[in-house]
Length: 344
Image (tube, rainbow, N blue to C red):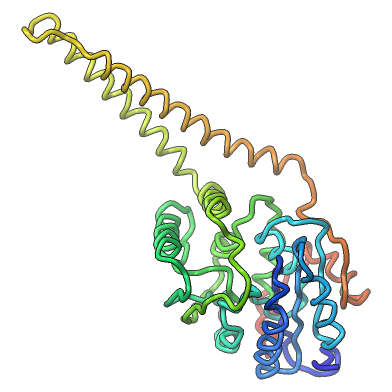
């Protein structure tokens, strides 16, 4: 058995949350590097793997890893709920003084966690991993990601850091505050920024995926972008209002011009084609606005239903004391003095 029992030594406990979806080919290599990186930081750590309804042999591989490392905790969700909810489930079950989110594809190096912990010890509640390079990604993905982050920063009602993914470290206080936010359409990056606690960043170069393929295809990327924009900004509604106002002003101006030409001009007023284009343009603006309203209303409907954020099929490595304590996570709050004391 490898790993050190976290109950047997003093010092801060560092939790790492790893969402897993069809990562069987690379999960063993990831665990080896992650465990080594955490061991170099200190003896007390836990790695929480959240199987988000994998359809390959990921769960069997995780069980084998758990047999060889007492610091591993496993969660298996009842089905695929999505990356952001899997991340949220792991964070809610994490018991560490720090909680770091890390994907299993080894694009984000686990060794960077040591720098994040150093920043936490210096007083930061949130430590972002800022990507200085994105190796192995297509120009389209790099370009759209750059555009998205900067658009989000301009549209959002909170200060969104750019070139930042889900790789970040949270203090215990920031973790508890994040867990208390129950919304279903989750954009964790924005939710963390909304907390407003002291934050800093650590720069790193993102590597190519170790194995398998990306789970974020174009449709998922668009849906993810919509969740981010609609969850943290009302500006799309304001933009729709301004577009409607400008369209009305333009239509009124065109009507005046046409009336003047008809009454006083020698140029005959023609243009069924232009009329059809204007009608289609007006209809398109109206339908776009209605669709935007529908997106906001749909999110209200999802929240009002009050369904659980996720369901758990299996838990491995969590003690009864852990389970009892984590049932009260949403109600738990740490004051600033207690949180600073835990940094040790």
